[in-house]
Structure formats: C-alpha cells, structure tokens
Amino acid sequence: MLLIDGIRYRLWTPRDEEKQFHPMIKEHFKEIFGSDSLYFDIRQILRTKLGIGSIPDAYVVTLSKPYQWYIVENELAVHQVYQHIVPQVSKFMRGIDNFGSQKEVMDALFNEITRDEVKKAEVEKMVRPKEIHQFLSDLTARPPKIAVIIDEITDEAKEAILTLEKLGVTEVVEFKTYMRENAENVHVHSFEPIFEAGISGGISEKAKKEREPVPEHRQSYEKKLAWVDANVREVVRDLTSRINTFSNVAQRPSGTDYCFYKGKPGSKSVFAVLMLTQKLLKVRIRADPKTLRDSKKWVKDRVFNWFIKQGKEREFEVKDKEQVSYAMDLIKQSYDISGE
Image 1: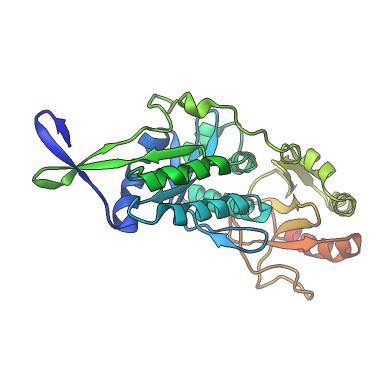
Image 2: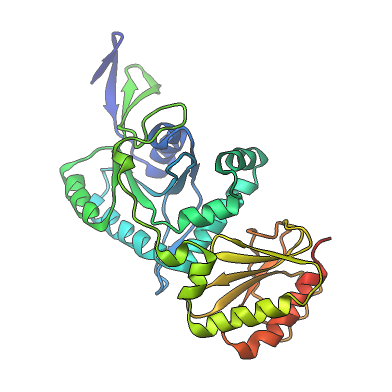
C-alpha cells in the first residue's frame, strides 16, 4: 500500500496487456525514456535472414545526445514470462541483425515522423544540421537497446532477466501501478526511469555506459563501398559514370546511401538513390506505374517514402554489370520526370 497525504493507494495489477498496460506505458513514455524521446507503437515486424518474424510492442528514439533507439517489449508478470519474453527478445536481436529488416524499421520511423508536420518540425530542429533520414540512418546503424517494461518483477521474471542480460538486454523497468481507494480511475505509478528528468531529457548515469561501436562499414558511404563485393563496386562505378552524363546532375551521400538529383538537391529533384548491400545494389527511383516502361518487371510494387515524398518511390536490384544498361533505362525514366 502507498499512503500519500493521508490517501491510501493499493497495488493494482492490470489483466489485459493490450487494453490496460500498453496505454499506460505510452502515456508515460517521456517519464520513462526522457522528455526528448518519441514513442512509436507501430506494428513493424522484425524478420531474421531466414524469415522468422516477431513484432515488438514499440520503438523509441531519443533526440538528446547521446542519441539512442530502443526496441520495447511490454510484459505482464501474470503471463508465463520466461517462456514468452526470452524467445521473443531473441527474435528481436536476430531480426535487427538483418540489414533488410533494419531498413524497414527506419522506413517506418521516417514515415511516422514525416506524416505529422508538428512532429517533423520538432525532429528537424533537434537533429540539425542532419536531415531526418540521415539521422535515422546513422542512428539505426548502431545496435539498439532492448527495453523490457514489466508490471512486477517476480521470481520467474528475475530468472528471465538473468537470461536477458546474457542476451544483451540492458534496460528492464518495473512499472507498478497503485489504485486510489474508492476511486478506480485514479492511479499512481512507481518506476525507475531509464532517463533522469531534466530540461533536455538528460541521460542517467546508467544509460551513459559506453555504447557498442558502429561497424566500420556502416559509418559512411565510402566505407560501405569499400566493404561490398568487388562486382557491386563495379556496378556502382559504371552506373555513376553513366548517370553523370545526364545534364544538370547533383549528387551527395546520405548516410551509407548515395543520392542523385536533377538540379538542386531536394525531394522533388532526387531521381536515383544507390543503396549498397554486400552482394547486390538496390536502386530507388521515381516511378509512376501508369507510365513506367519496365518490360523485365524489375521494379517492385512496394512504395517507399524515404527520399521521394510523392508516393512514387520504388526499388529494383542490380547484381552484375550485364544488368547496368537496363538499369540505366529505368533511371533515365526517373530522371525525365524529376525536378518538376
């Protein structure tokens, strides 16, 4: 029991994780993760390279230095904690090692930020001079922290935590809720925040521990280009040379990607983005399915919203130099309709 100014509050245990516990965590995420944090309760799946999928309860991004991102799992102690949470977190960690899955998470976060003009302006202000996409690209290139938020740390939960620590989980928050006597809608919460409260959402000493270094090949476009297979480098060099024969082309790296613009750099002028993977090159272009000429059906149906914000950003892959000529046909179509 808690006694606050003579008023009694008794421990209350939520029974419905989705309807009772998750909304409380979302309501108080800034007290848990810091005042400069953003909470994304999006259903973005993490898939391992073998296609095994798992969906976290939320993702959190902090906009104060040192920047950090979290994969969040909310859990009730009344469940079979060990049997559920340990396998679930293991899938998260294997999934985030999959570069394709990591890109999809970044895409989802970017979309959530940019669809809200107020949130977009807030993030732009916090991450300057970087662009939002570059900020997220650099941030998600670093390993996330796994945050487990549980309503009560029971003996079973303690066993699970010991295992989670070996897996690399560094943040476990016990989030207890007390209900006021004779007033069921009045709650008091007790928890140890990951971030200490402060004007800038200052990070606690616990969270100031040294982060894992960013792998060298994720530190810049140039380093990633040196890391990929030789045939991918040849494809990139050939494509870059041919693209530069177009008139009025500007170009620059964006994190570990490389963007080409028709005229002044911007979302309306970008017409090609080179995205490196070790075995092949992914190319993003501006593609209108109503007018696109793609006899070989290379361009995928999925629409992205990272670089080109008019709902026409699509992707295809190039594996060797023999495919470069057809790739250039697609890129030239994108160039022709860009900068409008």
